[in-house]
Image (cartoon, rainbow, N blue to C red; front, side):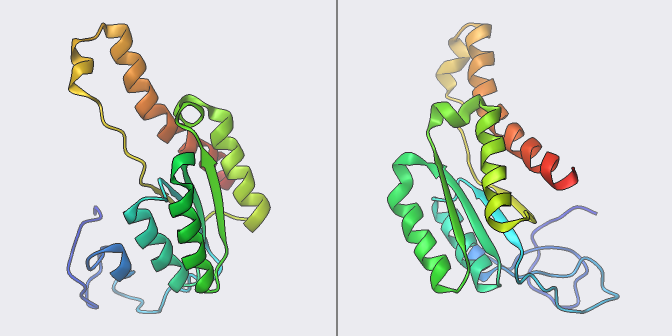
Length: 172
């Protein structure tokens, strides 16, 4: 069974949301048990967190008792600080981790440092959200194969490195 968008239906047995992140609903995966999922005290990592979607998710998580760690680019610090304030207004903690594009692009150490900061601050990581998006400019198609590979690598490896660092700590 794959996750898919479905309207909010308490009788549903699939996972889905009922609209924007501000209106997020958690729908049980199995119909048999209709107990409320307690998320209080869980920790969510939102990569690309200083975006509109990141803000929506951070606030929605905070309203459900989830602490938030935001990873964002240095130039987005003002927005990240605003999101942190919104999370903390909802009595949850918010960790901000800034990086620059060159650092976050392929650096495994940056990803490991992010996860270690989360574990030091909260002692756990429960939810991993990756909202960082990179475009692959069409002009790159005219570049040499080596340049295309480097451009593609810089757009894929940051995601891979962050997921790997999180899994190494969670599963370890």
